[in-house]
Image (cartoon, rainbow, N blue to C red; front, side, top):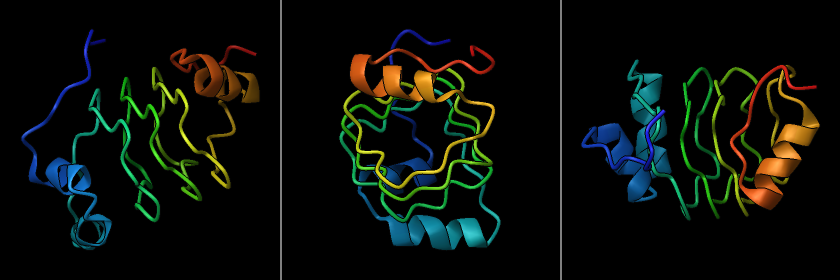
Length: 115
């Protein structure tokens, strides 16, 4: 686990930093599969992002707008959702609701199998 969120040089990550969700999704539909582990996504508007199958292990979403995202097939171990807007999100069924709540309200990193 990295101590600080990373700013990746990956062009796909940079699209997210610029909140260019449409281009990100277009590239994903053509087979791009960016490395999202440990990245800094704090404060970004990520609505409508195609997150299906992405590994967000140890990523930071503090204050991000995640409304309506479907994380059911995403890896979220160690993710922090402090103050993120998660209205309408789907989460992996192995991730306890208490973990999500504690992450949003207190910034803890989410853990699987902690029921």
